[in-house]
Amino acid sequence: MASAFGPRLWKRLPPSVPAARSLGRRMTLHAAAALLVFAALQIWLVSSAIAAGAPSAFIIVALVMLIALALPAARLTERRWYHLSRQALASWGLHARFRRDVRRLWAAALALPFLWVSGAMAATQGFAAIPL
Image (cartoon, rainbow, N blue to C red; front, side, top):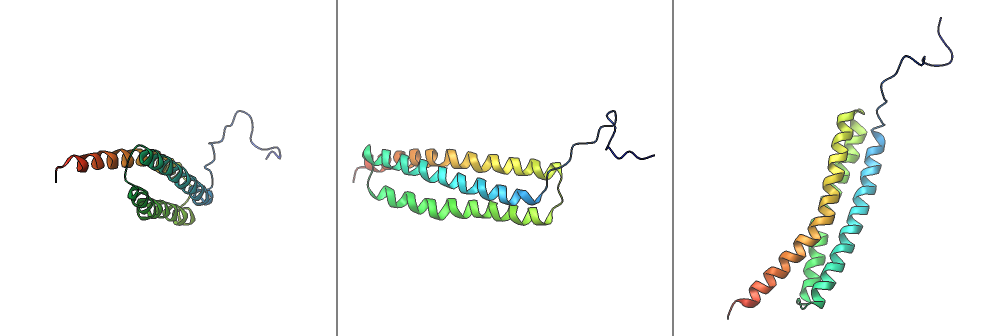
């Protein structure tokens, strides 16, 4: 006889896998937020570098880097997850890949402005030290 009240207490069901459809939207939000954080960090670091004596052309190079490198990389990641979430079946492996890509996206957004600005400042000081 079947019970109308659901599974019995002693019979545990495996945890359900979250829907794969939401992964595309979630990656879009992560990519947008990571780009905003990346841009804010880069603007802050570049303005600090200019206040410390870096050339003013540094701003133009920083903005070109933002547009030429960060935007296409974030858009490719977002687009890949949008298509993947529409085609793939939900599984724990898919969600593990999603978490890995989110970690990579945020690590890049937080680390690259510091690496780029410090490298550019070192290169500027190196070029200034070359006798002409």
